[in-house]
Length: 173
Image (cartoon, rainbow, N blue to C red; front, side, top):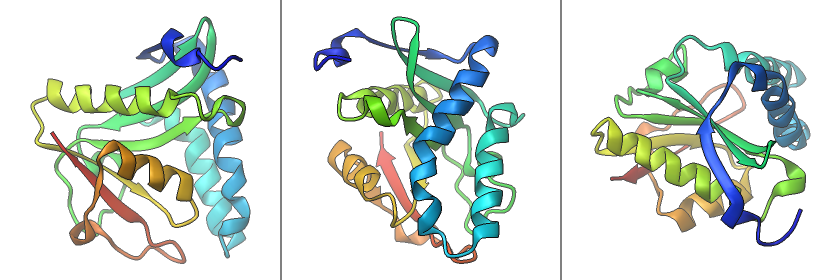
């Protein structure tokens, strides 16, 4: 991969035949966080949720970032957070970003930025005022990216979930 990769990135909707590659990308991307969960069973459940997420009937769009035929990143978009999660402690009725992932070998080349731009465009398409996401303390690089991009922390939407207390971020359109 080369440093000018960003100029050649195409973001489009996931095709059915790409699901296997995207599942592998998700696992490769999130595997680094395994040891940041104190409860191994919680991690196992989280990983299983990631693996089955591509078949979630409530996902509105799954986007992939490609360079040629290589899938380098992905993100899932939901019309609301309630569609993304089974039980929401604090309702979010705006669009929701879930499982933004860039393959470890493709990081630092602007792929996540292109995916986030596509997420904002999605929110504009459905005439939303904001778009939200959750992240955790262990995802420090992602947090820096979200804040650089313009997401603001929304403490009013946060909750405690086992040993994981997700941080909520909002991007106002």
